[in-house]
Length: 388
Ligand SMILES: C[S@@+](CC[C@H](N)C(=O)[O-])C[C@H]1O[C@@H](n2cnc3c(N)ncnc32)[C@H](O)[C@@H]1O
Ligand SMILES: [Zn+2]
Image (cartoon, rainbow, N blue to C red; front, side):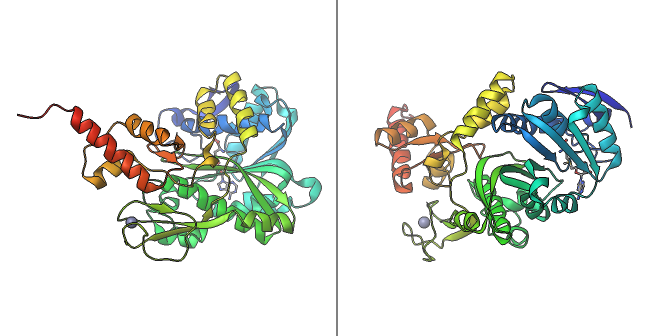
């Protein structure tokens, strides 16, 4: 394996040369994914905004996240890199030396779950724990919570998006104990299922969670949540766990699900999703501080991801897609702006959903969204020249 120097953010990493040319990069002998730089930029920004402290990069690979945190986060006091792959940690050691941050780093060639569970003592926990596995994080959630200090932040990557987003429903039920939805807002549902799973795993060991931020792409979901120690914090966080229902026939969505199997609008059979996190997903102050941190470092895509979360908790936990509403109405697609104008004119709030590639969030009932689309559609039809 040939390791080459590769700059990411303000840090020099040592990465396998093939990882920069192969997509996806090879997992052996060591793994590095340049496409995950955005994911790490957001970590650096949030760790900075939360004041640094101790950080555990519990699946460190070549140390891309951990060495960046040690080097780029001013308040970072000590960063512990864990991986069961010795070769990966050897590359991380070289990266630490290249950035002159070796004195801040600790290395543990260890299995993540057992390492994190071993750090349950109050003085041994970390202010920030990151869990970044290949695939599902399900088996590491409780270990991550257990190693996060009271008031500290746990961040988790899930790359089993097809499971969380409803392509493999039975696997989602088995792995996360929740029913997903494979629809227009499936990434948001996936984010909320993962948060609910974290809340329930935490509750079992007397810890609560308070979500801080989340983002998603086609390839992965990321969540960040504060951990709060104690049975009452655990009980309080379970209040954020609920269900929603969605009507595949007309597209309406409702929360919480009230047990009625039929859609109140069209009488269609509702699909129930959850348990999922129906509480707040964003710590607005911390996320805004992190957005500024990212922008100040030139991490513009990270700043954009963080900025896209502002205000998201003012809306119900789903979104709608205008193209989909048009296709349900068998109407030609109308400009999004026309629908937004009608909804805001009616006194409703609207924002672009940060969780899906397309779609809007609004506090308008679905019936009013449909009316706005119809009205925009007839406006567009009136403006179209009639065919001869
Ligand atoms: C997706 S990669 C992590 C990438 C890294 N966080 C980054 O940003 O470049 C997962 C890493 O976790 C390690 N790993 C996977 N399962 C592990 C386990 N149970 N215990 C310790 N290390 C593990 C792998 O060796 C691999 O280096
Ligand atoms: Zn319906």
